[in-house]
Image 1 (tube, rainbow over the protein chains, first blue to last red):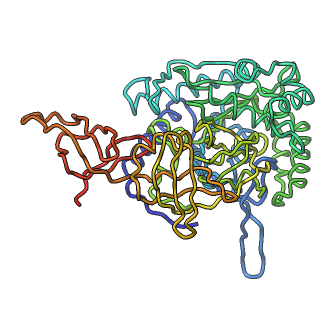
Image 2: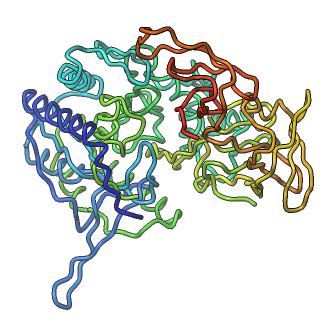
Image 3: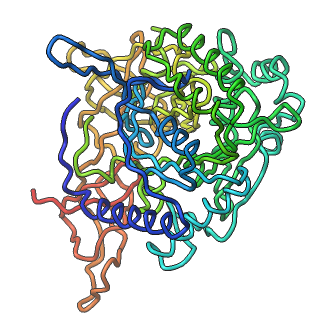
Length: 333
Length: 188
């Protein structure tokens, strides 16, 4: 990798700063408290699809392992347990084993926020208002033109994951929510299925067939109710097939997601264990597990919804750019 | 040679559905649900058709061993373009249907890169721009200074390119052979 100075991006960077300022103003006006957080932690939440960065604290002849956080979740949820209420973090997050690309930087900026007392679909309103607030500052109204496509932030185009798969991938609900049927369907579509999990195939078909159709019909698209296999830390729906998780898309690109947070510590503990097994199987970097997080949940996480937004991606849309590194004055590639 | 799709790079040739495609764009994408992916745009070298295809980044892909050889472009007929490898004096032909519009901007005797696999030419690498002399164009009327105004100009390969009004007969201009667009006037 090399250090590159890209002074030609100065105008884009200034736009990024305006978007950042608009975001801080909106969040604070809506009653979210800005939280500054460490990016190094002695223990973290195990996640099977996110690789981590590891470092070391050294004092004289003692050393202690530290990990760069892939999201501020472990800190913010502790504070929620302590009753902090509406809160947000806008700062660095780190993901290893992710190559630089138009949409990825191993070191990126994340906007994460939590609101107690609401579910995922209720929080969608705040997310939409955030998009509107940024649009008003950058474009003076709710309309943008991204890559020659007109779009308005007036409302969401909403559809469930099952509707989206039915409409764009011709996979019906019973096939989508049945691992074996889904695998067969993927196979007949010509995807390589051997040695790949349901999650792998879901992700591939979503990206190949569904995502390009999202956020292109004049409004950002909100996709809700993910299959339970993609639960992450989301709460299960009553049908026990899907979880209360959403993602939103602009021009075929996922910008962010949010879910009603799991507050059942036993279920959380179970998911920790299964994620750890997956990490070991995939020979991912070994790390200390944040058991204090489970302890905090035992104390009681209030009913809440949390959102995570790739902030450079969001800014890239408002700045009408193709790639997130066009927002940077210094980049490392 | 089989490789993980996560290692694919622009310019490489891959086998997909038993046909040869060239990678036009390869972008890493990790949705954080299921395996990481490689979003690619690939171009079928026979039909010229572009498609977007998303690989799982750990999926095995057949990458073809292809060399690019600088060759002299000799001439074309109704079906093919003919090239010569100046080191071996071997001649190769490529169908016009594969080379496409680029052929309209190629000058006989010039050198171009041809992709060869197992001694068979697959396609050529279009240069980013070509220098062409203007043979015919009308002089712009005085006072006609609308900015961005264009006029047709016939260049030495026989095709017409839209050029700015200040371009005159005998000027050498650059043209993007893939789009047919004028680039700039060059001093020669």
